[in-house]
Image (tube, rainbow, N blue to C red; front, side, top):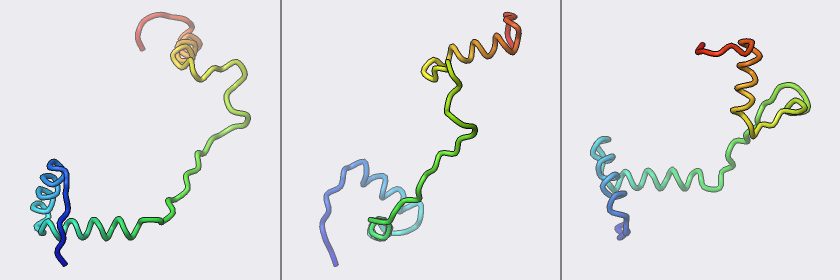
Length: 86
């Protein structure tokens, strides 16, 4: 079946380039993309679980919004307050 579709100029150029790279027609590329979109439409995405270690979150007195200060404190503890580079 034939139909007319309006596409953004840069999107059309990119699609033509991709079709040429794959050695398929623009119609084939669009059909494959549409089939892929329709096949996954409504499908559930895999759940994401953030794995953490330890209990209770950050240590008491640690402000995670002050990461540069935490790094400086960590360096001071590790290097005994010595200056210079690592």
